[in-house]
Image 1 (spheres, chains in turn blue, orange):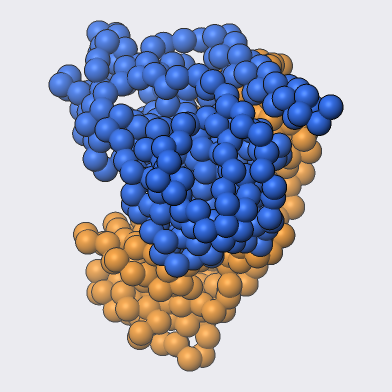
Image 2 (cartoon, rainbow over the protein chains, first blue to last red):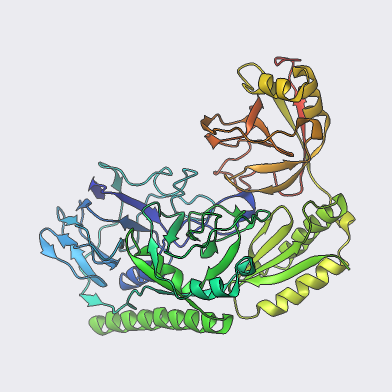
Length: 313
Length: 218
């Protein structure tokens, strides 16, 4: 088992999210960076949707009570295995008694820790292992990991070392304009895409709040309608909110855009004080970006399989 | 034929919006019939009805225009009567510690507490949509004599099972949460259980009736 010696700022069990229950007010949850979580799982020959630990900020400490293989993806939060520096995007073997520590980073916010064959004693809630932190179900009793918690896993012998180059994070976020963009003048619409947006400290897994020097205040409200991760709302105070995985299912603020699915993962790494820009794209470009990401995952899967086969021959 | 808008939001969310403040009963029933039609298509991961809209999230983003056309056709041709709602009765303890705001609701509306209870429990409410919390159903329309704004200062803890009103709507809190609605009663009926295959008792379009318990104010 894996003992959580220090849970740090926030660490919780997440998979690719909970689908099919939004009409009942149930949030999607799930990892904020699916590409990172899938890659970590592929490196360990796991199913892509195997639950992983999402680590926010870092400052946490785990102890492997049995030997296994693990992988770390996402941001470089200065992970060390019993004092040895680890690289992001690689799989490693841990011996019984090894400790895995995460420091923190000025530039990145979230890392993913996957274990070979996943954690063995978790049960799904509404078809997902993801922790719903607001409604308090899923994951480990609906709670983030706590000091002293233990997670069971199977013993595994050492796999050979392999790493994967993952697409870099960027601060340019591609957005498809939304249905209520016309609440602002053409000039204001244009300036949405020329601003540098600062990430506000109130940001969390529910949404990232942005602010700029330009005044986008308004007094328009809409009837509550369906919203989802990636929806960019503009509340009357003029500071946009990019909804993330733990957002509510309906919202009553004007929708000025929708972040393309391939780029939503960028927000997993944008912390308070960092900046980003929006780039307007159309659906064709969004589909191309998504196809590219799927190809990346498919290629990684082939490369890992090929590597494993070579070792067995 | 109707004043509606239909559009794609992002890559694969399809939105049908009826562009008016409140829906007629016929439009509301048509919207629920459309919800049922959308479910049958097996093309959507999630379908979220809201006050005057329904949003369908497609499984794939290859051809949203095709599904937008189909959805538009379905809306034009759908019959409101093809929708048959489930009816739920919710036994409710009104007033005293069960509904700490009943007294102020009565004084603000100029009614007696019994009249408030009678007005609240005589209507059949429709589940307009769910949101805010898992299993939190927006029920309408509340009798116009009971329309009051939300509390100026929301409570940090509203007990699970609280029966509450705000503006033209009523609701039951399915779990403990912060909340600004006025609490007039309480029910022991469990509305949301995340361990069940069908975790929410109330589904969009269902009908709800509150039955006053003899323990309460009446």
